[in-house]
Image (tube, helix red, strand yellow):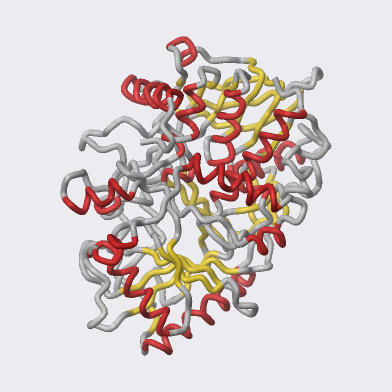
Length: 537
């Protein structure tokens, strides 16, 4: 179910489906490409999330033989229950990356531990990476975060984009690269007539009316979910996914994740090969200027089964804010790439993420049937004192909860830094609970106003303690290799040639909305310039 379906998409999707059926971890358009372990290629892309997927497609289209190295597995083969992914309400080992227990953002209900489950360790699709003061949710698998997010595809307000990334020409971004990204991702808006009538979005309509009572503006937000498919789910003519309590552990149907769009098209060029369950542990540079990656192959237990050294002329890092920053920080601090900028590891933020719930009156039910795909937000970003963009989120418990749930995106000026822990050979995020305080204050100012207007209160039973605001985790990690600081204004790493960054680590901690459209558009901009000016093949 790719947007703008082309012959390349069809060929790529067939290659992915064949690899899944055969249990392959080496995937390409031909059997030889799928099974051969390349030790030297013109270009390597690390990761398969938004920026990495753009890089892979554009390199493949340019005729450059490219290897994509992904730490997670390919999610395409059904398990014993006939489904690729498990649901939110019945999680199993597919849910999380080598955990003994699920770690959902909502951990309790009425202070009861009824949400998380014990599971067997497995290379599951969602990871919660824990640091002191902050934990970060990331996707693991072919498609990265596109597998586990809610699909909200928002282009940021132009004025804020210009404030955050002043070195990027906004005219070109809003005239060319944002439209291109949205077209390639397959974004769409929920049909308004169906939204107004369906039981599956009663929760969003309740939140909208309460926001309006407080004088707040709500907006429909685009999404990459197929709303035609969702309407068939509601009619009972298609297998339920968004309407079947699926999202944070993957959607079996309906969602245009990257494996169905950019990555399928990339494989369809015939120039791109994908290695899964392959963890890039280190990168260095050879005397001839090529980059050499140390890559651990892992199995379903997490054990290292082999270690490869892969050389490439050009290296594109798309492993996300955490992965790319750790790779480059390790390389700089160990002397493998000593000329990397001192800015590597700086400028990190969680996009001001805060989650909260409000308790509704009994005459304002939110519905026992809720779509997991958000389609509406409270847009108070123009508030000069407390700018907030708050996604109206579902709580698809299958029962009436009378809870309105939100993921608030706030303008938090605080920034974290990564440092290298040599003893553990890992990057550590330095973020204190106090740095989350501006986010909580902004969210509280907006939702105090909503509670006052509606005579409602906060829920204090959702996050494992008595907090109303969960500020110790985020969905939108940004920064660590900031554009124009750790790189030039097109993502070329300072100090090295043919070393590029294409992911969310380029964005300095905040973009004001869900970030993946911005990441995709910036990557399109980078690849257009790099392929025009640099000798990457």
